Length: 180
Image (cartoon, rainbow, N blue to C red; front, side, top):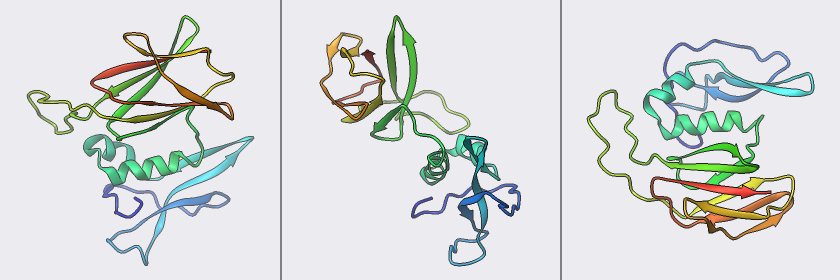
């Protein structure tokens, strides 16, 4: 991770990044000053790039959702992918894109109370989160941006091919509907 070790234990493949560039290292002990081995690479393939992680990062993150593992995965993916929609807010907000009737729909789900333990009886409480900053890459300035349900217009700025705005509060689920 950034300043904290992501405890991603399991089977790792030892690799020598011949032609690829190493973008992350792993360590057998909590000491980043020595004995680092390649954990992830990025390599050019045709006109694009491909990122590879040589250990169980996905399954370990799915089981525990630790912040350091999330930052490790995010850092590797960011080497090759820029999402169309970027969210500034807590990592417990899930985002999914849909299209309907010519609109781009940005679904925001508040998963702050999500249980990650193997067994649980119920979700107790989901606190609201916010403010959330949104930046959406668009081919043209949007005609209208609304918060659904309810149709409340969201104000934002249009600059360099992106609309940026702020959602003050997210309870459980909202949709930012963008009409281009």
